[in-house]
Length: 111
Image 1: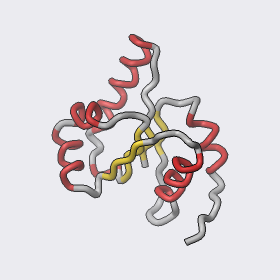
Image 2: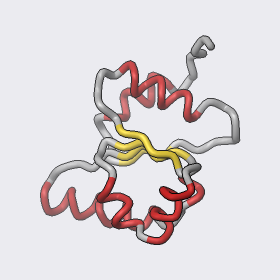
Image 3: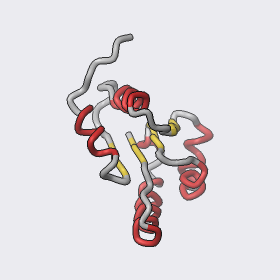
């Protein structure tokens, strides 16, 4: 299948090095996952990916969000994030802590 360029492609690429967390939302089947998969392949950077379609990962994300985030190395794409909104407060805490204490950056791409 041929990749179709998205309007957000250039904007997203420019944001990746500027922001610790990027969340992409939108209606189903508009190409959010396809866009991030394409960008992760073309950037020549190792970007890890998990999908919360996987019930074991989803349960871990919901029941122990802190462990879930520690388990997966960043930069990290979390696909189907809507299944575990519990992750949001932990992402906020970890991002703030890393920035204030270590001045390092967490990299998460959520959609």
